[in-house]
Each structure stands twice: as structure tokens, then as C-alpha cells.
Image (cartoon, rainbow over all chains, first blue to last red; front, side, top):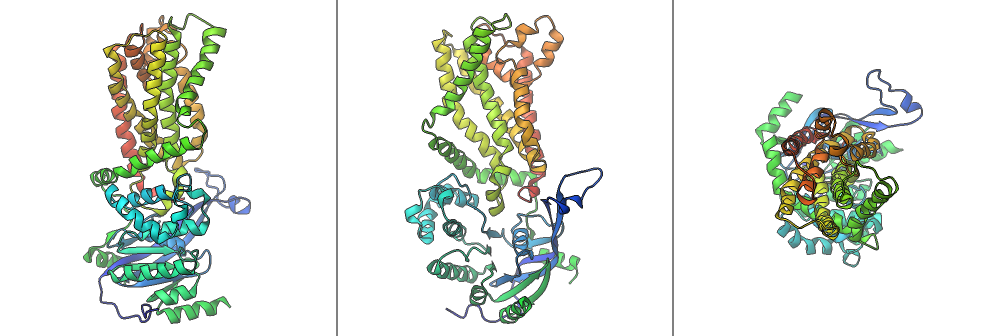
Amino acid sequence: MTDAGSSVTINKNRPTVVVDDVHVNYKTFASGKAAANNRQLLRRQRGVRIVHALKGVTFTAYEGESIGVVGHNGSGKSTLMRAIAGLHTPSKGSVYASARPALLGVNAALIPDLSGARNVIIGSLALGHTPAEAREAYEEIVEFSGLEEFIDLPMKTYSSGMAARLRFSIAVSRDHQILLVDEALAVGDKEFKAKSEQRIRELRQQAGSVFLVSHSMRSILDTCSRVIWIDHGNLKMDGDPDEVVAAYQASKN
Amino acid sequence: MSSTDLDAYAREHGLERVGARPPFTEYVAELWRRRAFAFTMARYKVQASMSDNRLGMGWIVLKPILNAALFGLIFGVIMPSDSRPENFIPFLVSGVFIFEYFSKSFGSGARAIIGNSSLVRSLSFPRMLLPISSVLQQVVELVPMLIVMGAILLFFGEPLTWGWLMIVPIMALMTLFNLGVALISARLTVHMRDVTQFIPLITRVLFYSSGIFYSLELVLKDDPELLRLAQLNPVHDYIALVRGYMVEGNVVSPLIWWVATGAAFVTFAIGVVYFWRAEERYGRD
């Protein structure tokens, strides 16, 4: 391990992501008691419940930072990632970024009916590769994923770990200025994890910013230069990895 | 730092708001740059849907043939009437096949966003590519369908004429119309899942009112007002145009051309703008 994730410096670098008082509301379909609470007269929607997932989060990320995001399940970490990636428009506040952030999540397969190989091509094209670039990147992606043997099988037959590996490999095939990794490292085996962490450090060195959501404090401490703690939709702490992780772990007990 | 400061700070460093709906022209340019995505996805989806079935590609044409056979049996043999023209089989087959193109575009367009939610949630790209891709998929399937339709028409004694080439501009107009319908229904189902429940019903109403197993022109020949009203249905008009050029004894009135052309461009334009305006909403819930 290198000392990639050590100190926090007062950053005079260019900002890459500005998260400005972001609030996110989810509309979900609930049942039972939760459903009965929210009945509006004019727009009656049965069982709709508003979940206030983020309640005004503000911070700025700078070039070359890799930021760990910690918090309990349901604290709003993934929502924050989706808001930064532009996949979920904030109900209040805004996110600014120097480039289009790419999110790597743990969702199910991209298109379950298609083979891994075809998902690689579709994924690369969706990321903005030209068809020629997609074909070029193909070998590299498959090799990185280590799934050569299974690449012709439909993605619905993959285990969640295999699917996550493939998605991760697709996403990091491009140099992203801003990469958001949501738990994607938790599923791979040890060897793949090491490979991914290496790739994250590389991306960071290319003057990018990396956000890493993880429940593994080891991963966070190994790769991050700054940690943000999200608690019940609020930003509870932001700073040096050792301090924040220590405070977070203390709160659990 | 207060909110306005951060906003100014971000802009000063050249940061842009994430997820903001791009201006229309920029959006269209982005669509064009990513067109390979729509084409590739359409092609893969056709192949995937085929490989699951033993008959594969055969189902694309077999389904409308079976449909036509069923209607032919019921309305041509069991309950014949004078609302049906002489050469009933070519008339029926052309109607069923062309309608199939519409109903499949409508149905798959409606599922384009909600049926690809994991894709929409994990990658950001102009969402309009999905409904476009779903209609492209139908275009790919249309080709073998038209070939089989032509073969059936020839087999039942329709003469092969230069007029048959008119199928190309007619299908081009219909594709624009179908794209518009797919874009509108793709957004509607995002707002209200309930819409998907109505789609089979709407499709059926259109099927019965578009004169597929009977001739609207024959049934309503004594009521020109009502006939004109029925001819304002674009789905009927695309079918009527195809019959007018490929099946003998069908005459195309100028009104039908006007409606077919107008509906294609207007529906397409409305669909594109309507879909684009909700770009920030897709994949949110």
C-alpha cells in the first residue's frame, strides 16, 4: 500500500464538485400506516409517502481528493451519490461539477437479458464512447473484470459480485474527472479489490476526484484523503479520515 | 459560505450545474453524438428477444399471420358480411401487419423508461435514446414483416406494381408518428404507472376503429360526415395508404394523405418536446 490516503491539506486546488445545500425528497409507495399519512385532497395518490433523504448537505471537493463517505444504512449516502451524478435532481439546492460525474452503483445488471459482452458495448456507448472506441476498450474491460469465461452468458445469470465487477470495469475504462463509487468494491474478491483500489488511485492522480461509499473502514482508510459522515440526511462531520472514522465508529456503540 | 456565494464560487471556477436539462439544440446534438447507443441497443434487443424462443425470428412474422388467420376465420368464413371487400385476405393481412407495427411501437415505447430503470439509474445519457431505440427495434422487425406481407399479397393474386414502392415513404411517415407516440407514452408512464394498464385497452379501441377486418369506407359510405371523422385517425390512414398502393380496389383520398403527413410531423414534434421537458425527472423514483 502506498501512502495515498494520508493527510488532508488546506486545499488551494481547483474545486471539482460543489454541493450547495442539497435537499432530496423521494416519493415512494408505502403501505399500511405510512400510506395513510399522506393524502392530499386534490392530488390523491394512494400510498405515496415523501421521504426526506437529504436535508441540506453542503461541501466542496477539490482536484486530486478521494473522499470517503460513511454513514449508517439509510443515512442518505447513496442518495448523495445519485444527486452528485445528476441522476436525482435535488428538490432544493444544486450540485455543480467541472465534468459529468460517473456513478458506479450496486444496481442490478444493466440489461439482464443481454450477455456480459453486449453489456460492455452498450455501457461503453452510454458512457459516450464512439463505436470504435467501445470496441477498442472492450478487451481491456473484459480483462480487468476477469470474467472472460462468462462474458458470453446473459447478465441475468451472473452473481451479484460478477455483475458488480463487470460494471466497475466498464465505468473505469474511461478516465473520469469525477468518479463516484457506491459500495462497488465491497463485492469483489480480494484480488479484484486490490486491483480496483489501485485503479481508483490512478484516476485520482489524473487530477480527478473520487468519492467512495463503503461500509469497510479499511477500504476508506486505505484509499481516501478525506472522509464525510452523513447521518440522517445531514452532514455530520467532514475532515481527516482517521478522525472522522474514529468518531463514526464511536457513535455506533 | 452562504448559498449565493457558493453558486458564484462554482461558476467562477467554471463548474456547471449537474443534471440540468440542456437547452434543446444541445440536447439534440448530444442525441446525435450518441446515436450508436440507440442503434446497438435496438439490434441487441431484437437478437435477444429472438434467441429466447425456439422459432426465433419466425415469431416476428408468425404472430401477425396467426392473428390474421384468426380474424379471417371469424369474419371471412363464420360471419361474412358486405362490409368487407372482395379480396378480403390481402385486405385483412395488410391491415393486421401494419397495425402490428403501431401497437408494438406504442407498447414498447411506454416501457422504454420504466422498463430500463437500472440502466437509467446507473448511467447518465440523454434519456430520449431509450424510446428512440425501442422504436428502432420495431423498425428492424418491420422489414421481415413487410416482406412476408408482400409475399402473402402476391400469393392471393395482388399484382406487383410500381405503386408498391410507395410503402417506403408511407412507412417513413408512420415511423415518425410512432416515434411521437412512443415518446409521449414513455413520459406518461413515468408520471403515472397506471397508464400502462390502459395501453392494451387503447390499442384494442384503435384496432376496432381503424377498419382492419372491415372497410370503414364501405361501412360508412352513406354517412360521409362520420367517414371523414373516422379518417382523421392516423392509424387508419397509414393502413389505408398501404392498401391504396398495394391492394387492388382501395382508393386513397387526398384527406388521407394530408392527415397521415400532418399527424406524423405534429406528433413527432410534440413527442420530442414533451419528452425533453421532463429530462431531469427520469429515473428519480
